[in-house]
Length: 103
Image (cartoon, rainbow, N blue to C red):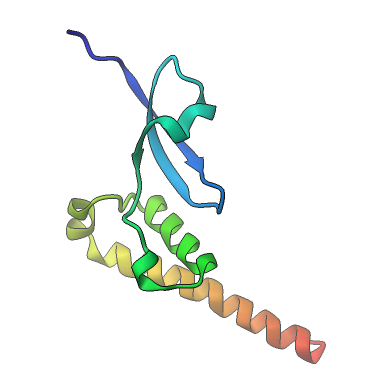
């Protein structure tokens, strides 16, 4: 029995989370949601606001932290992903101050 060649496709769900899907070569990219999915575990137990949950999820995908093995090999990358979303939040807070004071 031969195996069907697969390719990696990145796609986004309805809230903007990035996912990696494996699709057969003959399946169009638009079918990515139906492929074999790879992505970080659910971050819902962290009870973050959805905006920051999505940002963190996407940072983990960007850093290819999709499995326990990947996280074990590079825990500093998890910390980097968290720092990245904290920086994004800090920029938003600074912008709020600037807008509120007309600066």
